[in-house]
Image (cartoon, rainbow, N blue to C red):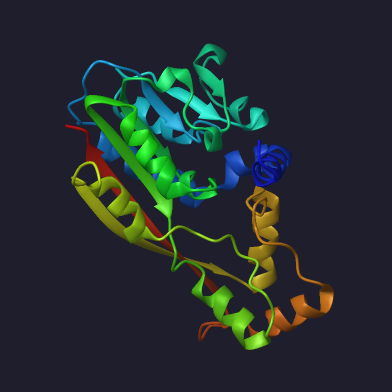
Amino acid sequence: MTGSSLDRRTAFGQAAACYAARARLQQALAWRLAHHCRSLPLPPGPVLDLGAGPGTLAGALRRQRPDLDPWLVDDCAPLLQLAAAPAERQVLWDLDQGLPPQAQGAALLMSSFALHWLADPVAQLQHWLAHLAPGGWLAVAVPVAGSFDGWRQAARRAGVACTALALPDGDALRMAIEATVRPSLDRRLRFTVGYPNPLAFLRELRQLGVQGQASGRLRAGSMRRLLRHWPNDDRGRTLLTWELRLLLACRP
């Protein structure tokens, strides 16, 4: 396991219960992705939720398509332990090392809010496609570059480093799929969430454990400059915008 993977696993493990209960955007996106999967014509083969965490996506799929029983794959044991799935369907596995044996000949590989945590999302996406059975499907929802413009703008104005997680380029992910097959769905989504101030947002990140692979912490003086330069809307709220990409593709 790489150092960044270890940091990520530790942060999520410490915040597992809070993440499972309060990660509302992740929950909404998982339900939407499962909705797109509910009518896919799947060949025989296993179904896996990659980077499953507490099983939000797998649970959404089971509710919308009860005939499927996904494997849950994640490298954070405390998160998997919160999943409403039997232990024998859970796979403790670091996806930076590729896919587990259970993924061979998969009918459906799905992943929501997980791909961006991996060291090389583009290469992993191509690796996932290669493990699909003929006629198998890949379904991915992932935050992409362009998210957190207000945070990055504040860092530039304050002259400090932006410690937000680097996110993959959405078009590069699409091109990785197109090297094998043309996506059947490529949807761009944009969600904006309001906070009373930027510190409330940063505290929420820590509480959810999602700071585990950010690029470091600012010293107190730099943090104060960052907070002073953070843009607000005309109601004084701090707005954080997520740019998301939802991709579906079928292997011939």
